[in-house]
Length: 489
Image 1 (cartoon, rainbow, N blue to C red):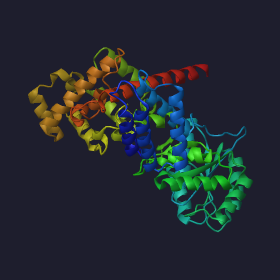
Image 2: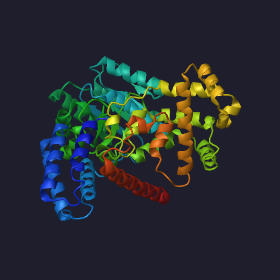
Image 3: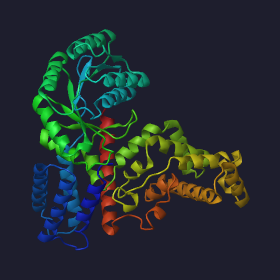
Image 4: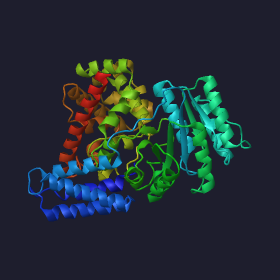
């Protein structure tokens, strides 16, 4: 994730307010100075930072938190709320036409990931909304762009309309729209040309295409790794086109992440999606409140839960839940859980969604070898049917046999069985409403959290625990709201 350094700096700035009981003016000023420097170093625009700090000062003054009780927690809440407001308060949905097709025009500089994003978004709608999208290859200046889109379309089973590089892109769009109408496609994606930088010829072409297509969405694809240049690019396109939103790509790269904090403020256009990875599924709706929580090191439990729900078979989940209640969870279930965790994405990314984990020094350079899961599955595969269903049978001699059968050291077998026992206990507690064993759950999925953190547990001591509690309460409230909305529908 792009915000590790910023998260670390902000956590330290807020941590400096604790241990004093009361906060005085000079304490607040010192922390705000650190926050200001952290944001500037993260490549957030100066104007945005100035406004952000001024808003926090005003809110802190209005809330009369100075010299008050629980002042540190109040400051964390104010910073969290202001970060959320800065990025747009709520997720901005895609515009949708009353009549098919909904036309989505993609714009952006060359190398921003525009063509890949077109395919990802088309695939997302196909998978989640049962949509029938058509992708139009209108970038005739880079032949590889047409080839790339056609390859992606073939892999994802999404039709692509193209007429090569010798036809004017305006004509390609006209013909593509006729094709979509004839085939009753409900979404059309127009992959337009890019340049290394904004120029008049490009903008004229994009304006003409917008006039021809009358798109419901004009989404700008911006590379987060370009820092403040991303904000300047967004401003340039916004001045020329009637943009409706932004897609921020490469947010998983080695970047300072300031673009996510500046774009909404500078252009007034919402970030609608973020791309973090190369897989077709690596495109997520942008939730400002969740991103704010992650930046402050408070995790992102809602996204974690949603990822889990997408990968879990409901019938199997119900069966496993009942086994957890009855404390009969076995190694067959354990392997199923491992596979579900693998499908959710890289373990190091999942860990940072847990409140308090993102700012943990032990996780800064964490990289979990996918072979870890393969080795664990090999050990389970070496068990007999009886051993899988009754783990208590695994005495020392049987464990030696498992090690030999899986080709793994006996120490690794013992460690996995220990993690299984921890996971089983934690899940049994969770079904009874006790969620205090979250770290143990992740340990059961392949990591011993206490040893990984050097026995320190939750980072930041008392302050870290307060932030974690605050984050969990926030997540619980948001989940209740989500359930109420679903109920109304």
